[in-house]
Length: 184
Image 1: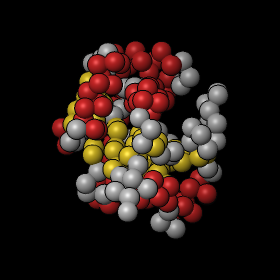
Image 2 (image 1 turned 90 degrees about the vertical axis):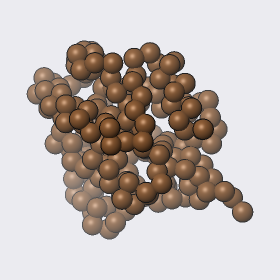
Image 3 (image 1 turned 45 degrees about the vertical axis):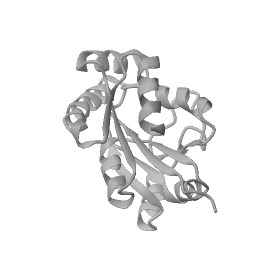
Image 4 (image 1 turned 60 degrees about the vertical axis):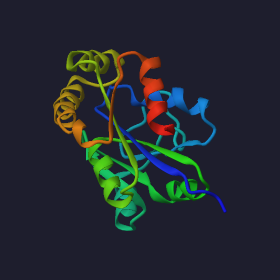
C-alpha cells in the first residue's frame, strides 16, 4: 500500500517569488507535484493552457464552483483563481507531495478541507522590494499594480497565521529553508 503524500500550500503576496521558488524546487525532488490552478484572467505572453494555468471563462469557472470541483477558489484583482480538486486527491493518494502555489484566501480555505496541510508563507525582504518586483515585471498596468500592492499589505498582515514564514531575499537561501520545512 502506498503511503499517502502531503499537501503543501505555498502562499504570499503577488511578486514575492513563489513561482520562482517552485520552479527551482521541482527539478530537485521527483516526488513533488505542482498543482495547476484554474483562472479567468487572460494568459500572459508565453503562458500555456494546462501547463501554467487552466484558462477558463467566468461561466466555466462558476460551473466548476457549483459542481464542487475546486479545493479552493477566490476572486483576486477582478479574476477568479482556484485549484481543481481531482488531480490533487490523486497525487496525494499516490504518495506524492502536492504543492499549491496560491493566494492567501485560498490557502485559508484549504486549511478547512485539509487540516494537516503544511502552510508556508513567503515574505518579501521589504514592502519596497515587493513593489519594485511588481513594477519590474513590466506586464501589468498601473491600476493592477496598485490593486496588488493594497492586497499585499492585507496579506502580509496575515503571515503569522501560517505554519512557517520564509523571507525570499536570496533565492538559494529561501530554497534551502523551504526544503528543510517540506522534508523535515
